[in-house]
Amino acid sequence: MEQIQFWIGVIATMAFAVTGVLAIADRGVDLFGVLVLGLITAIGGGTIRDIILGAPVFWSENQIYVWLALGASVLTFVAESFFTQPQIYRWMLYIDGFGAALFAIQGADKAWTMGYGLPVGPVILGVITAIGGGLIRDILAGRKTLIMSHELYAIPVTLGCCAYVLVLNFIPQYALEGSVICMLGIFGLRAAAIYWDLRVPRMFITKTR
Amino acid sequence: MEQIQFWIGVIATMAFAVTGVLAIADRGVDLFGVLVLGLITAIGGGTIRDIILGAPVFWSENQIYVWLALGASVLTFVAESFFTQPQIYRWMLYIDGFGAALFAIQGADKAWTMGYGLPVGPVILGVITAIGGGLIRDILAGRKTLIMSHELYAIPVTLGCCAYVLVLNFIPQYALEGSVICMLGIFGLRAAAIYWDLRVPRMFITKTR
Amino acid sequence: MEQIQFWIGVIATMAFAVTGVLAIADRGVDLFGVLVLGLITAIGGGTIRDIILGAPVFWSENQIYVWLALGASVLTFVAESFFTQPQIYRWMLYIDGFGAALFAIQGADKAWTMGYGLPVGPVILGVITAIGGGLIRDILAGRKTLIMSHELYAIPVTLGCCAYVLVLNFIPQYALEGSVICMLGIFGLRAAAIYWDLRVPRMFITKTR
Image (cartoon, each protein chain N blue to C red):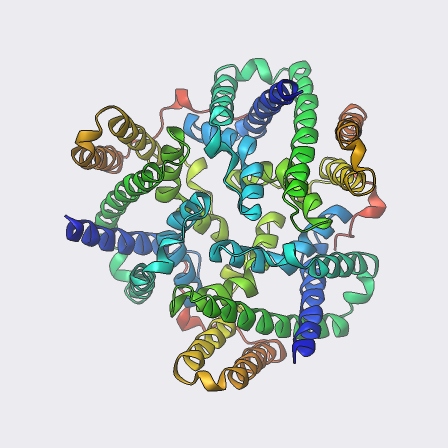
């Protein structure tokens, strides 16, 4: 089980770095910028989470995630033309969605285990873990952030974290099964959004004036 | 007294969420974005303050502020056309100014009580408590931040925090009266700025080239 | 030695505040904005570093850096036309580069001494100390950040921090000499970039589409 989690974490970190770099590559970023923005996309969310939790930042205890993110970023820089093939890029989006699902549940779980701000804290921190890194990347790169994009990305993440908190609260004996189901739920919704190009319906958007 | 403070905090938090959402509603934000940006406007400043202080983040100990901010944000989304009436919106600006005054003095007081970086620390942290949430909201929403706006908002807040630190340092026996007067002073200056549409005079602005 | 470090710190802090203000002065910023942005440029990087380290923020223990940064910011506001003379501005850029070199090695050293996330932590935190304040300033001011600029600024800083970590790891008995050499190396590369107006070569930049 531990080992499965580790490998999922490896895949998710690398996917975040790759999609993070691809998101800003079309702006003409130098290799240093690629490393910084890839790294921030992959580990930024967890870093904010740990700072808010008052816990040691996770990558200070295990640098493997830093190396993976840097490695994936360099790889993306070198093989940019490979990753920007529509077919491959689409695959990356799915893996990124899987990573978001994993990071969200991991983050919520960490906050819950620490008893942090129950019941609302784990939801907030799960969402931050999943989308925080991408937000900092977009701010540094001068891009429109996810918050303003009407993409169905943060909403599945939030719903999944809420569901997981309900599981932990009411049926804690099924925590493990619940975590897997919530993760799959987030991933399923996100995958559907990618596949059918779903966006937030108009009635849930404020009127532009 | 405790109870008065609590209710002022309730009003201030909701006012921040409402004006926070109204500030970005004209950009076409979806309901999730409204929740995130309303929440950040209301609790973001206090969160940064507590992180810098190394103290537990305030909403991890009492979720009421999170619920109030989320509730006020949803309300603003649903009743957008009510809140954007010029008359109502103006009222909201005054309540928001009142909230800023309260948060600033609260923040300065917390830093002073912890003996944090005296004497300059409480001023910096009071200002961050009052305007930090709005700054993050504007950055995430891609808006020009308050810092660049020439509005008379942060200046009253800063002056009030300086005055409060002087009170705490030289006449600590009048701390309570001083806090009320400084709060009213901030609110008075801000209200005057709203009423007469005052801005920073030209001579205090760098020359554009 | 202690005293030399102190005076270098004084010069670096003031230089960061001056160049920080000059960087945004052409946007028409009011005096309050000048104070905030000058202060953030000078102490923002060290603040993020200490938050990530979980250490008390450095300016909470010695306010001299806050006063220096505020003083230098006001001075720049008042004497803007002096500092924007091409000859003087160029001097400021060199001093700023010197400040970045000092802050980077200081930051890396602090993280190393705390045993934080070795070996990669000190490099990340050295870079954050040197460029973090400028990044927040640019974000608040709505400017393109350093990360997107192709300037040779962060790259010398990163190389210097890597070299210093190698020194600390393999020849710790030469830590002092190593720190001076790494600092001079960063400054030398940065000065060369200013003097010959060097930028990141095209082959290290992603293709704009």
